[in-house]
Image (cartoon, rainbow, N blue to C red):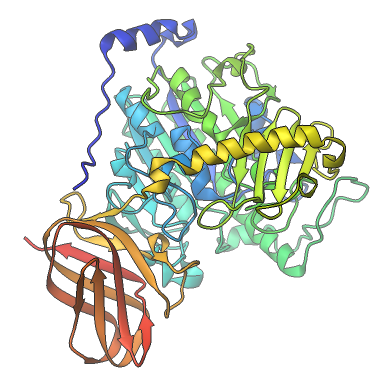
Length: 589
């Protein structure tokens, strides 16, 4: 069996030396940290960024009072962004390669912001979306969080989040969430619930500095919004108000316009909740020495105002990867303003290490760099010529499809085949061509070739990462999680597993020897005569043929030996193979 324990010891002498080398302003007590991230809120989904329709007075004021990182970049989709944010490393190093298909489970050996700050004496809490593993040993409570209130998978109402999936059009309301690994029912709208619980966490953390990760799942689909917020936007035309604006804008269909109205309502609700949170911070008299960060995880999923940028969520163009990033710390960042240096999600962990007097892990490569000197108006070396790598395709990176390298003023984009010629690539000067409209590769083939060689080198290194080559397995039978629920988000096998019923699916697991009760939940009732099969390496178990008219089937007192295996369950009926929505596996005493 694999030993999943991890202990990081930092000798006192080293810690002292690091402390003495930090800026003098850090001699005071470490600050609290509030990191707020929203889901699929684009750069243009703020009034501060020129959107004439959306109402975000709190976030606009926060932007004015903050240092704004105007060239801040993330991954094109959510789980890769969140793994890089949490670890300071490119997502492929952490084992995260997809948003589902079993590719959104982060290796437990990774050191997160929460673990780093917990070692520095912080109390840590997450409220909202995690999306880096729903089972031991990859859950928030296994990765450094003292308190966690989350939904499962990539979003509420998705098949992987099975406690809200069957609520369908009301999955964001009165949800069953997971508090420290246990199901718990709540009343109200999800963003309000996460904020309420975050405020309680702050109030209960007076004896320690705290790290609060408030990770809203809104405005991700399904676009469910409280009626009072939808009413604010129901009559607007989100495509209007840009007459004479020479920036490029995509045309909006009627569905796009209706989606935008719902998104704007969801974002205004977030704005109100951030206002409540900041007011609570004032009431606790903690504003002065609290770092507040606001950011989003990628560009917008739907077509709407995005400040003229090309692309949206899942694209490597700036519309998919450039997002807002505001940071405010009244005690030490007295001046607001803009930082134009290209920075990224991988830089947040090392920056917080500087700010919070915490020790970076020194046994692995940290791709990010601390931008704390830039926040103080000082020079920081190494950013200008640093390459930033972007990609997004399902399962694993594809050569050379939706992949990019940005370095200095230039960005090389691949939207072509694995054996493409250099002329098939795209090259942009993003300083002179901020909307990425003028492909200059023909006149700069030598530069493009150099950048492609660097991109190839980075990709070769990243896909050789041990956590990618040997993906994380869900542990079955450990005392830390019993029973275990295997959900659709973490199921591999056939490409694109979602809500299909007839398909080949599996979960990669690490089983501890013992006897188990298993329960299989199907999306809809299975009707007819058939038998249940469970395949695990060399062990295949099947029931006798039975007449079924139910969405639940159980196998009792099943013996399973120690093994790393692909767990493959299906109900065979009339030549059809029905894959369950989720599996509950309970180890018996």
